[in-house]
Length: 332
Image 1 (cartoon, rainbow, N blue to C red):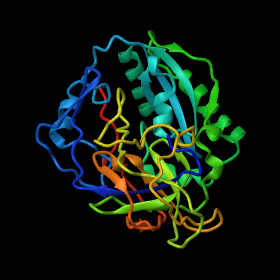
Image 2 (image 1 turned 30 degrees about the vertical axis):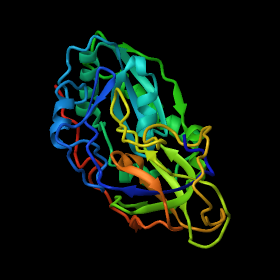
Image 3 (image 1 turned 90 degrees about the vertical axis):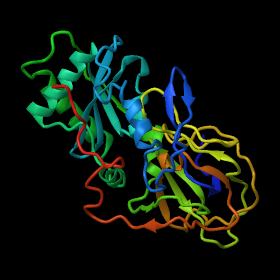
Image 4 (image 1 turned 135 degrees about the vertical axis):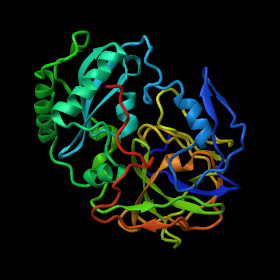
């Protein structure tokens, strides 16, 4: 848990290693000891990822899953509405992981019926099943009022349920909008936010947590001055958060940095010494995908400033998502 106001100061140690495969409720170590690219959100090597996808709903290789599934509409900003499915037993967890600003359930039923509905919205209404991370981040800095979000979701919800070809075994769900403004602390995200690049051995991140949205953590970076003395969490931290349905990713360490779900709840700091952090009015704000920390061993920072590359985000950035893929492959 990374509550707002927490000061972080950690460094990457050694090499970033593949986290292996999640099977039967436990993590199986990567047999290849593969080293990963520090700039990627992927926490598996290609061979472990291929094994994971051999039994995956997302990859359409688990079509016999008997669990009921929910079809949802997720809102990330004006014009950024997508359709998706998730196991009903997971509730809204998948929406939180994706950083959806608001969402509404569309239907519930067997996996194959849910997939048909997802494909139907894509073909008939041109509703995508994913957006690039850059587009979602850009939208968070200038969100319209909640009533406008609700109206946009409701309009699509009505259009979707009126489509011809709606799967007979998929039970429609009456419109009800859930908004994540308070959960994510969206009002704490400024209009201009830079991005932190990938970690490399010895690279350090020092800053104060503003909030988190899905796997994105927003930090006010330290300026390097004396600033406010604060205990920083970082010694032996553990990278987590693969963002996949069915489990979290872990790397060796004593603490934990979560890469899925909201940041800003209750949490206990582990001190590693005073760090100079800018006051709330100073210091630039940057965002990092916490999944990029998965696979690293994280130790306490020795410096007082962030040494990971910080890049400004301009118009048109990020034509593809963090995984470098386009649309999800479908059965239909």
